[in-house]
Amino acid sequence: MALSWNLRAEYARAGYAMTATLDAGLCRRVALRHSLGTAIVCLAGAGCSAISLGPWAGASLGMACLPVNIGLIYYAWQFARPLQTGE
View 1 (cartoon, rainbow, N blue to C red):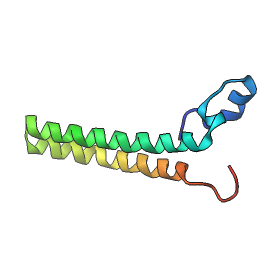
View 2: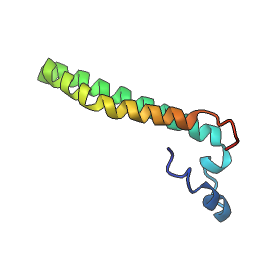
View 3: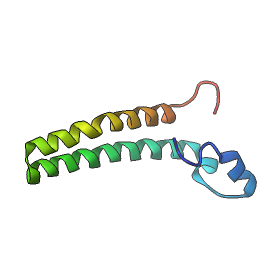
């Protein structure tokens, strides 16, 4: 999920102090928090569009961004779950 997650061993070898290498749990929680925040911002934008452009615009924007946000939250949840067989 996080961009640095797949390359965390290389970052650690190079001496970079990054969240993915120092605190894996924090990296996972932040990814989940940001995916939830993205969904809230998109739905708030749909609500603002409904006020300014009409209810059809808000509903169509909300429905258009909903599948992407659900997928993002699902994969962030999978990433944030603790693994049973180590990291």
